[in-house]
Amino acid sequence: MLAINNLSYYIGGRALYENASLHIKPKDKIGLIGLNGKGKSTLLKLINKELTIDGGDISMSKECTLGFLNQDLLSYQTDDSILNVAMMAFEEAVETHKKIESILKKLETDYSDDLIDKLTKAQEKFERLEGYSMQAKAEEILEGIGFKTADLTRPLREFSGGWRMRVMLAKLLLERPSLLMLDEPTNHLDLPSIEWIENYLRTYEGAVIVVSHDREFLNNTINKTVEVSNSQLTTYEGNYDFYLEEKELRSEIQKNAFENQQQKIKQTERFIERFRAKATKARQVQSRVKSLERMDVIEDVIDENAVVNFKFEFNQKSGRHVIRLEDVSKSYGDLTILSDTTAGIERGDKIALIGANGKGKSTLLRIIAGTEKLVGKREQGHNVNMGFYAQHQLESLHIDNEIIDELKQAGTKKTELELRQVLGCFLFGGDDVFKKIKVLSGGEKSRVALAKTLIEESNFLLLDEPTNHLDFQSENILIQALQQYQGTFITVSHNRHFISQIANKIWYIENHQIKEYPGTYEEYLYWKESQADTIAKAPEPAVVPKKEKVKKEKTKPSTSAIAEKELNQIESQIEKLEQSIKQLENELANPEVYGNPDKLLTSNTKYDKAKNELLILNQEWEKLAEKIDNDS
Image (tube, rainbow, N blue to C red; front, side, top):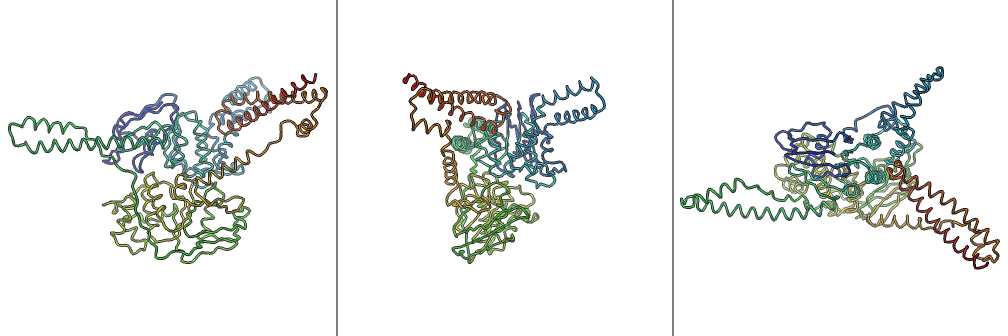
């Protein structure tokens, strides 16, 4: 479908890609991974012809259509409703609909056969383009990724950048390109929306290539991993977990090959040095010199799993009670966020605040920080020194500062050597500490901001989406830093792997109340699933009307007349069920259903339930028919 052959692309004198190749097949679901700054987003732009390659070629089949979601779309604004923006995906159908409306207007005064013929053809085309269902499809996808029904008629301009990105994602999904390219799609999605997108992509008919640092998202959506490293594209035939295992095996083989080659090089160099001056060995020496020149040098394995050994120091520990909220309420006009809710944070708590957007997580974080007005009581404990990390921390960095100077401005009494040791933990070694903030990538700026936050000797941290824009290596550093942190923190995050590694308590907002699960994220998920199973296993109404069933079991009819009547009732129910099952089978064969994960799940559930009910009724019928035969 799409072939990248010997791709070369340079930025200044640096090779971002050099003779790199990749072939994308129609059903491939590819996760594009690698450190920040290695060229993942650039590759998508090269495929989309937004950038010009320096060498090689990118070719695609005539049938291949591209859809590209990138961060540049955040700036798109219009006064059109978000429903209309999403429906721009059906451009031809929308134009046909306008034509139909124009013809209908003319038909008010003109009844000619020619006009009626045009209307018929336009309506047939509109139906062929699935025009009659395009609004329903657009509404379904917009609501699936988190919009409320009331939001659909609001202008796009009223929404923040993250929500505008969701609208553009919805439009892209409705276009159904044969190659869907997504650059960090989960950065602006909450957990329910991420799970919805995962389900959608799993059954997406075309190919997908996604840049993401959310390993759970990758594991749940991709079947192939492509790593950008050393200016090359290396393919692994599996999801992210498979990549980790396979990478370890390949790295071990490469490490052994590198060490063997290095040993051979040293032996050859020693031979050359030893016998260079001897005329009798001149031919052998020259032969070995040429062999070194021809040798394909094997690169050493770069360890990307940096280990952090950062010692957090506090001038003083906080008291046992860090923050206490009592009977707290918070509203914005008619919108209620919290209502008479009570919660407490104790020293040593490592809390993940999770849930859908719009539930009030960021508001609650500001209430805890003491920057949000509220009704009720907020009490801060003894000796609590608070530090706050959010995405705006990146904007507060002084872009003309060098990294080392930025940390000096944090106000700690650490020496330059101590600050350099801290920066080393965050992968800024050697002369890197003298880089200007303005030349850093988003991930590098995040690491500087985190380092700055963590050296302020705060014993209570508030972290708002700290993993956004972090690559896997930087995320791993943050996880290790927080695992070693001896203080208290609360973080808002939709990154499931991150939450599972750092949290010992889970908070969520339900019915305007702060709810707490006193355990890890895995334990919370298990508890949540068991709660759902308990509800699912609750007794359902019997298929046979309860009154008649009880009567049958208690009275045990002895006359064939009563039994015949009951048999007829069951036969009638069986007939209705069989008709229902036939309709459901037709639904499941409909492309609109099996191509839509939510509809497919709903129809499958109904189908399984109906088949189970039919089985029960048939068993009842057989027992009753046998009883009638025996009585007669």
